[in-house]
View 1 (cartoon, rainbow, N blue to C red):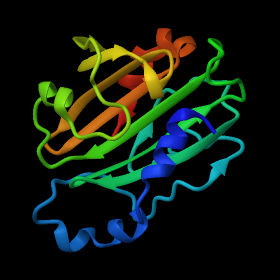
View 2: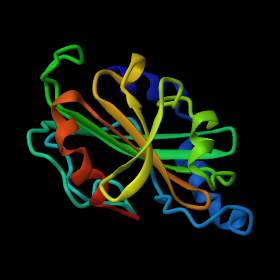
View 3: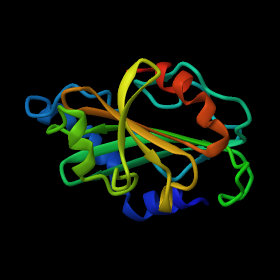
View 4: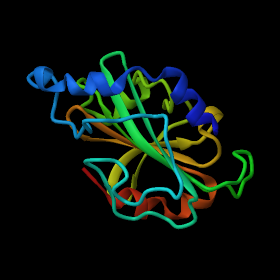
Amino acid sequence: MNKIQKLATLSVLPVAAALLALPAQAAERPACPVPAKAQSDQTDRPAKGATAIKGVRVGYLPKGFTYGEILANQHDGLIEYGYQWADDRDDVDRKHRALWVRVVCWPKASKLAQLKNAPFQTGTFSGDTKTVKIGGRQVLTQEGDGALGHGRYAGWVERKGVVVTVMASQPLVPELAKIIKGIKL
């Protein structure tokens, strides 16, 4: 179990139950493609493909992943869910291939600058961030550090109330523009 998985499993609440309650809250929550069922306790071998995250299509998915896992969490008025693809190398191995794509339903999100202070539990933009254009999108980016591991972390506001983040390990950084460009909600 890698660092992101460990952190996610420590903070996972009964997300499935909370997600089922969404229709009653629809008037106060922005349209966000939240799956009806998201559980963080299952590892997929082999990893699922481009449609591993219900409501999200990862149009360009690099090869070489041996397993994947849904990561879901609810806290502080946010619902976070995503999928992490990885190979069997150790997290600290610089050749380790890992990709984490996450959607965050955060009603207050409307501007890229807000991501610096977003109440994410894992994958915060707390380091030396830069605003750049990657894959045709204006994104906030920083070097991966701490729980995220090595590589590049990027995020953007897809539309009001909907944030997308991507963490690509070092071997995947050259493909980050294709990955980001291919993500469709």
